[in-house]
Length: 218
Ligand code: ATP
Image 1 (cartoon, helix red, strand yellow):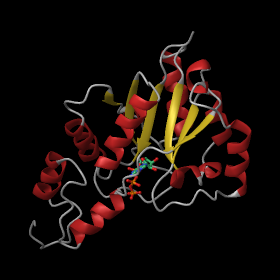
Image 2: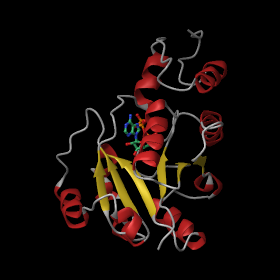
Image 3: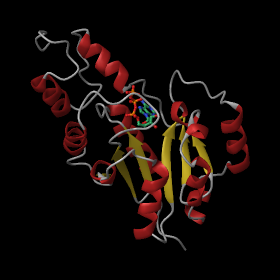
Image 4: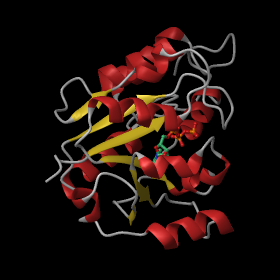
């Protein structure tokens, strides 16, 4: 019998917010995951580069999860040089966790673009995917994403019964929060309070990140 599955939530975390944190807790509890690892990417190959530095983003993850059991920071992508390819991260985790189901968590926005990722089909040799609905994001996926979902769709139990290869779609209670929205609010001089943990917001404001030059904190 494999060990309890581990959830892996990769992202830019620019900044980490309550959408990420609630998602991690809901999935840990509802799918009986052993833990959820938050994996900030250093140089995401598929999107704009983050505004905050890797050091700042990792620090915010650390303060956000400081007293939260079962949610942990995994900073291996920040310690590696070159682009952060998820398939390499999973292969690396698999070396030290040979008997643990690995479950890559991704929102519907990310899943729609999966077929453009480096060696994306090889992901299923290492991990399952937990596919999460996201408010405002269509589930009308492009053809290749739709095909792989139909071929690999599995129940929650599949995440416990095998080490890799299934896609489990689920719909945890939606929270309409994103890094983009938080950056836009701060840039406009509006308050993003309660969308993200207070210590993270304080640090962003103290350091003047996301704010146009010359603007004072709200
Ligand atoms: P940005 O707006 O900068 O793209 P983000 O919050 O969408 O920021 P990431 O930090 O890169 O993005 O997100 C990491 C992962 O968490 C992605 O798989 C994303 O789909 C998922 N995610 C982020 N926010 C939510 C949310 N509110 N509900 C469900 N999934 C989310």
